[in-house]
Image 1 (cartoon, rainbow, N blue to C red):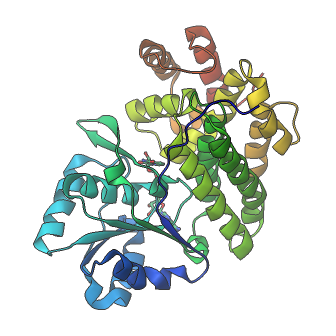
Image 2: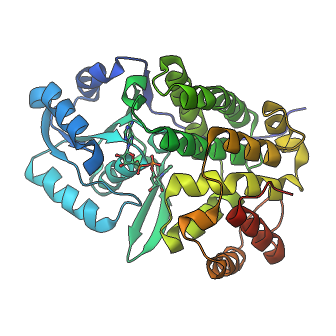
Length: 353
Ligand code: NAD
């Protein structure tokens, strides 16, 4: 029997497929906008400039200083450029960092956002904005930051380095897995989660073998889109909160932190809700989801150890204290000894016990 549930998700318009980058001008027209500020990180500046050139008069400038964790100072600079150029919308070309900047602008001036997503982080389909001020990252959930249109062109991900493809893909899988045991889980989100997980399960090994495999790149973007919808639709728990705490306090790289912690947070949670994680165990042909994810990460050459990110034993103590001092709902209640033990396993990179 299906229990009472609510499914509350507004998904942007999606334009998917090889060559869809050429649709940006048409899609701006649909939005009734014709003065786009194109956003990127410094690393993707050439792509952003090329897109601006292709857009011609529809682009009024490029701001290529997006960085991870969306510092409010960078947002202020980008807003000045937005106003000086008379822009009427943003086109965010990149991963979560660039998309975060576009959302931060939209949060302040309601600019419509068109996103060209080039990683698997999933931010482009969530109403969530994380931003940093004075070293503190806060998260806001509001429909005003949800992009209007998302373009997924697999060709733009052909050169996403393999390590980043793997960690970003595991980051996407983390959204789906936490969705399966969310307090507000529901049949639709779980359906999307399993479809997204299956697509990434198939795609990531193929990308490791052949990074320019067009089908695998398309599968990975498709999977990450669905996993992102799950992130936007239901609440996350232990895994995302721990990544947030560790990443925020120690300034750790986002996707790597997710990739390393995932088998261990899942293993911790699995003890309370094995039945909810059984489909994940089956997907990895493993007796348990946590061990299946560990073996999958290992087979992909994913980073496995927190200590390789420069984390110390003291950091683990502090992260444990922070994690349990700020209680939130999890399927398995937070308990300092258990959290410290899972962090220790993640630090050493051992197979979850
Ligand atoms: P990122 O956007 O920081 O990208 C990492 C690097 O890879 C950057 O230098 C970028 O320019 C480069 N890059 C991106 N795509 C590329 C491509 N196709 N080819 C070559 N290089 C490419 O990394 P990310 O993991 O996508 O995003 C992390 C940020 O996103 C964090 O700040 C995180 O908090 C945020 N995030 C937010 C949400 C949300 O819903 N609000 C969800 C997930 C992540």
